[in-house]
Image (cartoon, rainbow over all chains, first blue to last red; front, side):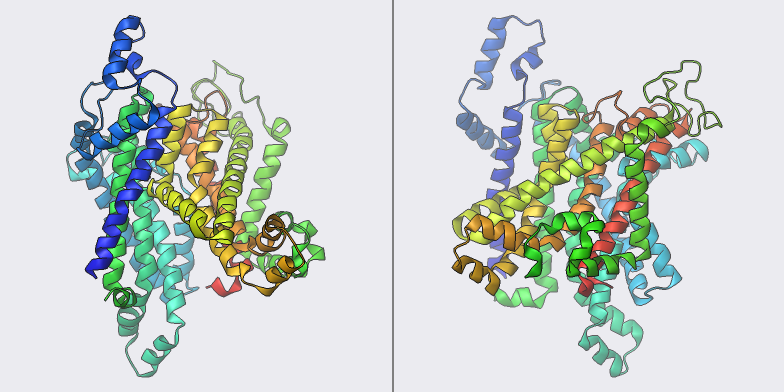
Length: 308
Length: 299
């Protein structure tokens, strides 16, 4: 068991190195001179050249990348070209807001998605099933950012019960979390339903029913446990979509998180900040998936057995 | 295998050509009995029709600004109202179908060709090459796809070509995985051995024998992928990184409507509905295709 966890944790290192390489390469080939952006268009050429040397921009690609990784490991992601502050501390200051939003959204997604999926599966082709499946499909089809705007239109502008932007209170959290959470809920509902439907056809479910167990016990104890594995996978994967969705949603609701920071950075061509933001969100996503993989080992005895 | 001579990919997209081939006829028969999928297909048909005939059916020119009719609410004259420059929203949405369909199909084609190619090579040859390719795919999968797309367009700039490339590349890994799995499940079959025995080259075996037999999961993923690509492209345009105005792209129209949402709700509402309807139809068709291509999965 420990061997399995250790193996998965160690795998994170090459993946993150790869992610850094991909992101660094993209940013490396970006047209535009960071030194010039930092000093302004009218800065004298000597000053720009000096700053380029200081920032190591004249070094060959592999040395720049090596230095980037070396610094990143020590928690230094370079300086923002706009605010001149360390990117790491800029991101760190905003990270709790993004985490708070994502956690609330995941909670909404799980609390809505799994129960609705189970009821849909147990009452297949019922009116409840049909209606919730159409709504779930609409939820999957709706652009996040549009849903956010429509919620602002309804709750902030028309009936005026929720603030359209800002941060701090529960009221501020509701709309952005619902925006991201409901679309993830739609995916989870669909997955839960199909996973449950697959399981309830198995022989052991028939056996459980045949021996006279109540339907509630059959569903909760026998079916759900086995249906849970694909559901957990989807929840983990949704987290990635959710972090991506946060980028758009945060800017709609002026939520002071990493996503909005990145969108602002893109507008001002502040590449180190974009790079740092992508890395940070990719790391978060990888850690969540790692947690999901470890969780498997606990809910699936078959995996546990392999690593005894 | 009877279905290895022609490329069934075209047969699946254009059901007209299905007659000759019993397997695809069977798929079409199952699909056509699925009312929801047919509904989706009908909507997609209408959207394609709108894209083709946009110049004739749009009531106004999508570029013409009418400064006497700025941000007008929906009326008999402008069915969906006008935007902040007095342009007719319905006409812009109709012309926007071209952009969205183009972006959707081209992006997915990029993902299918690149991802499918990598997956096929990886699954067919295995070994070190497989390891290198799949580890690289793992790396790409670790970056949420919209973030990867954002990184690419922020580096290389917006515009329709870059958006298609960015969105296409960001979903390469999922196709690579699907194709790899399909190739592995097929390559051990006897007809592959037979092809090899008569001296067919690797390329020929992959293109003519393996890929046509692993079309089902690719078609399903591609149908759902078009929906995903349209959504991603709209998202990029929404944050100003995608297709630039005055092109009537739905995401950009939404973004434009966002600033005037307090006074003109309709400017942001209708392009969003257009996106939702398109994605909804593609998802219906994708779900239906999955059930039709693999009845075992049907719930």
